[in-house]
Length: 476
Image (cartoon, rainbow, N blue to C red; front, side):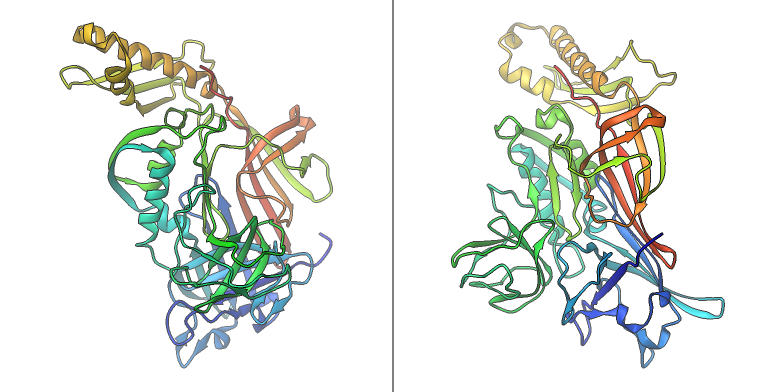
């Protein structure tokens, strides 16, 4: 592999005398002393994480018998093929950030006569999506429920800062205004007040995202301008400054997302969000995707069908390994559904089977479609004249018809690919990429980036991508 890569690891304690004071821990020696760094981010996953081994640097990280690292401390990982410059302890490279995570576990081992400190770190995906959730929502929009879940859980999270869920049109997090205009190169952001903002986070001014790592009562400092692939720009006094993150509040047709009734008892938040993302709740033709970005902000949106400019072609320099397969994991050829209650408040449970399936095994999934009976009771003019048996039959028929739309999208396997590339930050979770692999008869096939893993070793920096073909759009 040609070229030398550069890595910066910034450690910010969340307790003790150095609380909120960042430190560049890569300054303590050559990278052969900080080895085996692995950082992963993905869509629709319960935990983004990275592992870090500090080799033979015990004296650097232990003072008077006390380790510098503590649970919930924040570590940021930056990587680039160009030198990563620092202004104090602030990385000025706009797109070098790989992940921001909190220390979850610390261990010490002896390996080949060397004392090694190993850190296991997770981002806020882990804190948020593992938490159990129990709440009833009556006649609320899907995006309202998503935001409410994230905001409520993040307020009780740990690590010193929040996971935030915002929309462009419905700002529900902290906001303030610029107290003076700023130029594209300014590294201190003057605002009316930073009260209520996390100690480390990302704010948006106009269309620019700004990553900050410290703050005063009236400024955001230690900033990276043009964060998350936005563009650093001039902003006028009075411009709104808001916490970053995105939860779509409009469908692809421009209408508001539907209002629904939702109730679950102590189900993990990940499962709740996955259910709410299904087409039956959004009225879209594909399920929504969601993820926590590298700055710990939630994104929940329709899987955009625009292919990014970066393409992947078999045989291209810098593409070291590629494996393809047809994946049956998400295929469905039988659905059992709960259609709600009948006129006597007795549940309606029924099923549908895809008689056109080419799968050789039964792949079954359960869906809670209680809205079928609820909507019929309100909207169907025939409801009053139906007997209970007729009403149950109507609900079953509607459920079977709805199941058939799922079979058209999820009835057959989809293409997947796992790639290993020369280290790169060109891809983000959820990107749609054009993939060409002639040996597998795949030509310019759009595939979704579902997971990104960066491996940093003494042999080089490698980026592993997991790609998956989107399911077909559901047609009705």
